[in-house]
Image: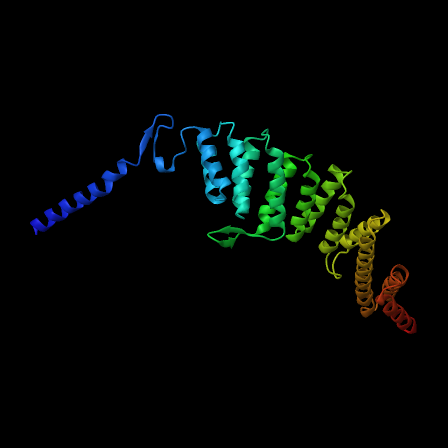
Amino acid sequence: MKRSAFLSFILTIALICIIEVPCYGFWVWTPQTKRWINPKYAAKETPQKQFDYAMDFFEKGNYEKAAKEFERLIRSYPTSSLAPEAGYYGGLSYQRCELYYKAHLIYAKIITQYPHSKRISQIVENEYRIGNIFLEGKRRKMLNVRILPALSTAKKIFESIVENFPYSEYGDDSQYKLGLVYKKMNNYQEAAEAFERLIKNYPQSSLVEEAKYQIAFCLLKSSLPSDYDQELTDKAIKKFEDFISGNPPADLTEEAKEVIKELKNRKAKHELDIAKYYEDNNKYQAAVIYYESIIKNYPQTEWAKVAKERLKSIKKK
């Protein structure tokens, strides 16, 4: 028994030695970082050599490998003048192999850490394009499986551009797209506020008229059903009427008119429900007020005819 235990002990030590010994050859102590580094995963000895190494993969079309090597340069030489350049090419590499979320992460880091880089305008443009891809519904991928809602990423990207580069070429577009993101998320109040900010901050933008329409639409979607408070419906009608008065494109004008018609129909139905409530409870005077209001204010709706019939019935009573 003792002999068996002793042999087990010797075998264990031998295994430890077999496992441990080769490892020493793969790790090197560096005084600069004051830690052990495996040369296999270390950057080249200078930023330029690392950049050239990564660029070689990029030029050969091995974009995923190139991106990883550009990222290695940023991690290993963050103060190098080549770091933002590596960030630009790293993001571009991920874009070319359709790993858009990873591209966004690199670009976001460059925007934050190197805002004065000569590549910033190109990076902002690339970020804007990635934001549009996610706005259209593309999900982030991990291990070739699509995960995470696309809209949350689009929101971060457009917010970043608006916050960091509000007056860039993509400032007003990003503010507008931010409104569309909220709209797709069914956050209509926040969407309306985003469109309002576009009108306020970019009054000369070609998107102002579109933003006015979107505000009216969001108020329409936010309005409650006909048996509740109609304040938001009134606001939506007013916004659509203001939109039409601004001479917008013909197609949007016709669409706005149809929406106003539907909203007024909703308002009329709401007042008809109130009138019927008063009539059913023998409060005829109040019912008459509401029926007459429907006939006067919403004569083109189907409920105006019903209101006229109810008024005749009440007069008979």
